[in-house]
Structure formats: structure tokens, C-alpha cells
Length: 279
Image (cartoon, rainbow, N blue to C red; front, side, top):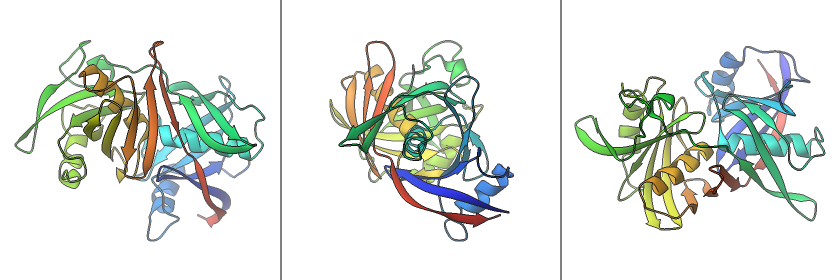
């Protein structure tokens, strides 16, 4: 079955976008595994589906590279927003998108009519342990709590941005053995729905260096919800101001935890190429 696709990336986090209002229905889980393969497919961290919504202007579904479905993706929603705006599916510069984490609001930032960045109201962080979820904490916050992984002791701060995150502050994010510990954090029994894990280094009160192991996608160049979770964790631990620049493997995002308790993420979203695939 042939269908059209567009590939986009946000700070190196790359996606295959399919307009389901125009293209034939697919086995999206199976398609994601094949299409996201970087040797035998198009190559991506996941696929994004454009769907109609009864609650918002659009609905976005995210299928990870392993075929599992994610509730939300921060870099993904910026790419989604740029696609629907540039393709003329909306004339609004600010619109609503239904996701598995609720209805979110991206805003297109223009310069002389050209999209420069996308700012997204990511909503409020979820901090109660049983809602993230993290086993054993009830409604309490999980801030700077001990966790042992493969015989090594860490301190974790956990946040949900509609999807679960475990933030671990380290002295040297660049050289941290993420390939060793990332997959072990993901399947740790403290996380009933598995977890995304951010290994973050505080540079100063307004700058954080972060690397991420994403649930269902392994190491990626960036994670938008993870950046929001990392800033939240840094503020909860008294390490940064409420707005900071997050330096990721694939670029930079600016995240603010505003006085209204919402997190705002601003960053790029770029087209890579488009084409026709056969599944």
C-alpha cells in the first residue's frame, strides 16, 4: 500500500508524519517498526498521525519506533504544529491539539511570514507519585529519592508531562554511560508503565545539559517533555531558576515553569524531506 509522508525534526528528534485525513488506514504499530528503521526504512524516532478531533482543532497520535504508543511528545507536537500550519490545514497561529496527555496549545512564531520556532503550552506537571506513576509513593512527590540500578545508587526526581519521566542529576552528562543505565531505568520495577529517563547536569541557574533515554525509542537527540520534566525537577531541587535553556544532543530548547503552573517550551521544528512509501 502506497502512502505519502513528510519527515520533520525538532532539535534532532525526528518523525515521520502521516496525514490520516488524506492517506489510507495502516497498521500503524507495524508500520512504525518498519518505517523508523534507520537501515531498512525511512529512519525516525517515531511516527506522528494527523487525525480529526471532536475536542480540539486536531488530534495527534504518536507511535514509537518499537510500535508502542506514547501519550505525548514535546518535540513531536512542535513538528506537528509546523506541518499543519505550513500545509494550510489551519490559518491560525495558535490552535489546539488533542493528545494522550490532554489538549495542548502550540503557537507558531513567525518572522516575516516564515516559521522560526514553535512555542507550546505543555500544561501542568504531574507530581503525585501514583499519577506519574512511581510505585510506593502514593500522592507524595518523588523528589531526590534514592534508587539503586544495577548496584549503583542514584537520586531520582520524577515528573509526568502526560508521560512518565525520571530525572537523575549527574556531574557529567556528556560522558555518563547512558547506554548502560538508560534501558535499566526504563524497565525498573518502580515504574509500572516504564519510564523516560533524563540524565542532567546543572551548568548554572539558567542552563542545563541533558541527555535522554526515551521509553520505546532508546537514546534520542532530544526530548521536549523530558526537557520540561528536567526543568521542573531542577526547580524542585532548588538548582535553577524557573526558566532555563536545555542543551540537548540535538540542539537547544527554552523551558519556562510559569506562575500559572504551566510549562512553556519553545524550540525549532524543521522539514527534512517528503516522499511516498510502500507498506
